[in-house]
Length: 203
Ligand SMILES: [Zn+2]
Image (tube, rainbow, N blue to C red; front, side, top):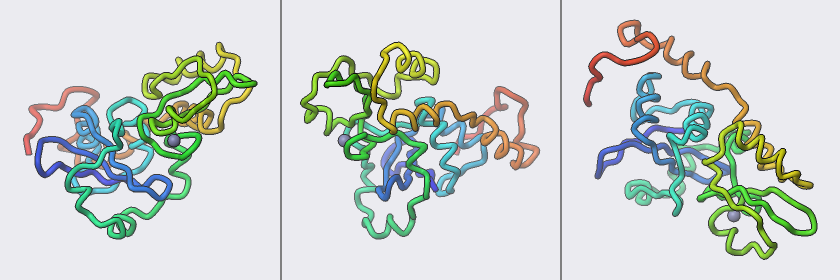
């Protein structure tokens, strides 16, 4: 399960999760941390990968172009991380990855004009290696559920890679209730009705 971490050397938070057997670090925007905090998730705590995919879909959590490695993350031993983050069966289906190498680094949706018109997701390592002519190359996180649907329909692809359809499925998932379930579990004093939190504590 993903774990919330706080940077040691600067302000801010990040998330570590095991994706396809690799530990991946997600940068977290302030809005993303606020959502986790409101749901009662504290630093060091694990949480459902459904919340992570929801943060990712909304752009509140993202993998950096270079594939994030926070300094303290680099210092940790790989074996230690493997124990801490056992792979979650099925987790990879929720998260988009490269059609060729399964990396999550800086993904683009690529329209390849080979013998057939084909839609794939390629990472920043695989894009330069692609020899087939491409029509468009769009950063994946620019797509919303609706725009991806239109893009796929309008482009009349003959082949759509399964990673693209899997990502479309995860965009279609309604995850709001996952957040609500957690909020309901929190102490009544922390509950606020839809909207602004009073004051907001600094810690
Ligand atoms: Zn790749």
